[in-house]
Length: 373
Image 1 (cartoon, rainbow, N blue to C red):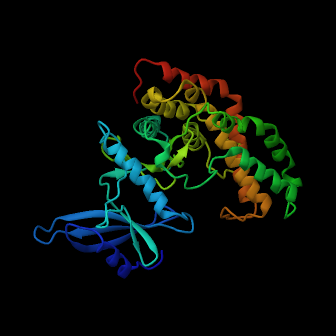
Image 2: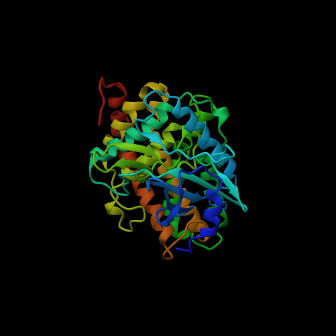
Image 3: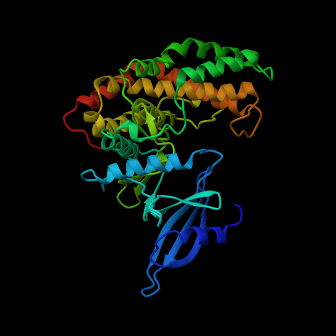
């Protein structure tokens, strides 16, 4: 961890109306993109401690920080205006004196949020009840934001989940084969070629106006839900940097790609890669149960396809980077990206084998009378 920039932090905090003076700063090492610090502020007369999280936004990753924070402000205002908005809300950011939900200081962008106490997040779980609550949290995110006009949001990362474009870029890398690796991956390349049409179906339906754009989180991992340590109930959705217009099926699918895999993402022994149907069922129960009334019938019918689509999309991204010479994803050994790709490809094959079951599970919760975790 690099040295804490105390002078910059102190200067940034002068832009906020805080209830006291800075008492301590502690780096938070989770996360790999933004620089994050847990700070404590002490109220001078009572000695009360208030805790916050201060982040410096990584401008190499997020080229337009103002647009990122604009999107977060729009969804925050919308959630605040909804009934029962305290029921698993979203992380909010403190307004600076300027009225913005960020501070631009010395060329850097900073933001401040209250520290969520007594909370925990999970990278890996075996308890389907927790998976269901995570599904509920992301489904409620969809439900509460369903009527937010897309005109109010920026597409901060264009073509982020444009799967046909990802496939086109992949086959361009196959054709170029800059480091001579395509022959060794011929079987995987052939499988992906056979799935290209299916993987492009969601984007085609969107282009035809049959699937609406929704507010999507675009990083629906389990650890982006903070949960109460004592009750296990979801408290809030975090990591909102990639919030933008998208397809609900891709948010559902990205979660399934992680919680539904019985192996780690870079598992070398692909025999360990299976679709965890209990976790799939649990996530679908929480997600579909809370947001089904805000989705169209076709959106519900394509949720399972979203899981398959994004798994194939991630496979072409990993394999494409391997063929290009490992220029995008950080690797820890020479075949790392290929192993990542083969893990995703195997998961996609398991999904194809159980696809009708996946669709049936979604339909079960779409039409059940009372769905609860």
